[in-house]
Image 1 (tube, rainbow, N blue to C red):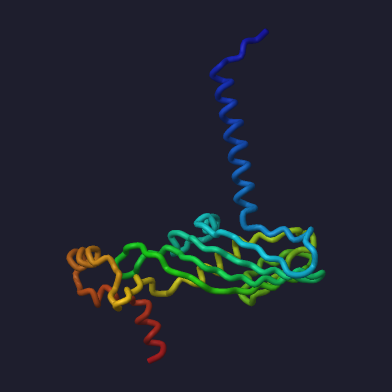
Image 2: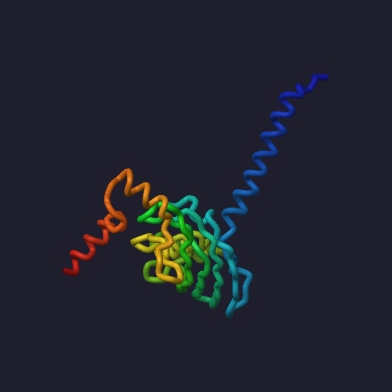
Length: 203
């Protein structure tokens, strides 16, 4: 009878365990922002999702550093379409254009999405709040929609908010260092050339 090499046995066991762990967590991640609608009755249904930083994974670059948002969703199901009313409330973490420090940016906004059923799922973004979903589908993955909706809330000029007295909450130590090593005043540092170009369009 051939003896089992303990080292090989340990290695194979580790690989098997890791592969199962990875597969399980990958499935969980893929289904985290899904809604399965095939078994639901026609009418209104309510869902709630906790949206975290993992919603950014797998998509193009973003200015968002972190995400902590709750999405409350009302879905209406009928034989020919699905409609969604989204309400998002929470915060995203951004890097300040002025002092380069990170800060939390509060969000509270709504979106709508209307889905018609067709032969194939459309690859178009829901810029007009509509999309086509294949009749063969029994669920919808909302991760890309969440990603788009949240990224559209990022302001063009990302600056720390002011406090209750109207004073900037920027990192003043960082501003002093920027002025010291880069030169210029706070006002000059605060100026964003992208906004200057936009202003020129209206002058």
